[in-house]
Length: 190
Image (tube, rainbow, N blue to C red; front, side, top):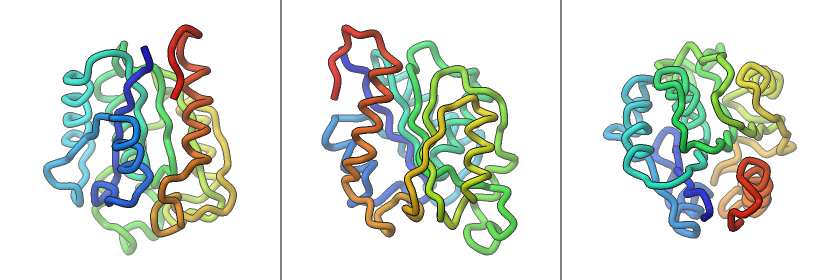
């Protein structure tokens, strides 16, 4: 059985043309829906992720983008992970401690400090070399702290709809490769 994807969006709940929304529809993924998608808090957003994990049967792969990445790492720190979480794809991590974040997105600053503990499951961080919400070196630092694999997406902006990443087939391929590495060989692949 293929692990089920759990989509963990960032601010604004990733719109209808965002790759996370398109993957949710394409793969029948579960989705974390926050009461207030413009006001992230480590405790509130982590609690909602925990609810979705508990309500979704089978093995799971978490797919976070932007502030959704911060949700996953806060959740791992607060809840210690979950036995059914087989891995996480962490795309375009946002740096809640970035010097200009209060001017860009003050609400994101509520997710500071960014947890730097190793994750209790395998993870792949995909970062852009020109992401306005996290420097490339900072994203690499996060990946090292989380003991996650790290990969560049090139100069891809924030890896969202605005940067031209609608369906994002390259990301889908990376997800499939990561799932292959994280799951036993008898699992069906995407």
